[in-house]
Image (tube, rainbow, N blue to C red):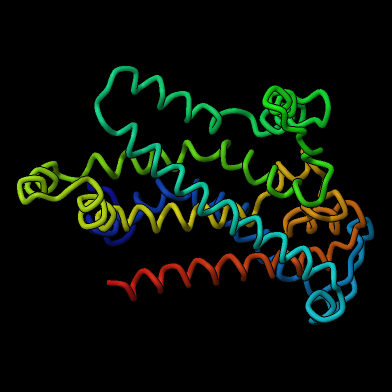
Length: 299
């Protein structure tokens, strides 16, 4: 006696689709829970007045945004600091990464050791890196000022003078992250066919002309990716500021990400902090879109 049929059998295409969704379901579930969920929550809390400790929040509409954009001078000061930080870090980081990549992409003795040395800070703990540089940049006992004193230069109090604190944080951040961009540039350089360079040399082109007309244009896609990553990372910087200056002196290094932390977890203005987080999200999104449009316009 044959078994009773329970329904039409699934087609191969349907079974493959189900298998695909089952395979991606763990990471998709995590994405929805840990990214989309908090993102929606931030948008909701940005329209409320909530102190994080209370069980209830009060809906205030767009008041948090209006307060941040029109009635809070500190917000514009903090936003300016974030843009200064990005404007200082991004070109310095990319120029140094490209220079290192050009130097270390050629075969020479010990090149792997040099690459490792410059990449090591990337995998070093951000906390350890910031603490070490805080000691190195001490006014009297720091190794940097002691080295300057050997050549007769009286170094400033790097992290406690408003004119020097931001520059100090930018430079130490560049040294921490430049290795990653260097590796990306080296990988891109290795994809450029050597035939192009050899043909250009046969035509009499010098090193600068080869770089300007062949190497740099072919590096453009990688440069765009690096620029977007570096800009986003610079606008989200928090650990260096928290550990090295705490936003000081005189709010000279108080950037937007650290200001959001202070408002949310130090002063418990959670609704206001959420609104600032949304502003930071929109700012990063706008800059990313702008960079991609500029890149598309150059094609």
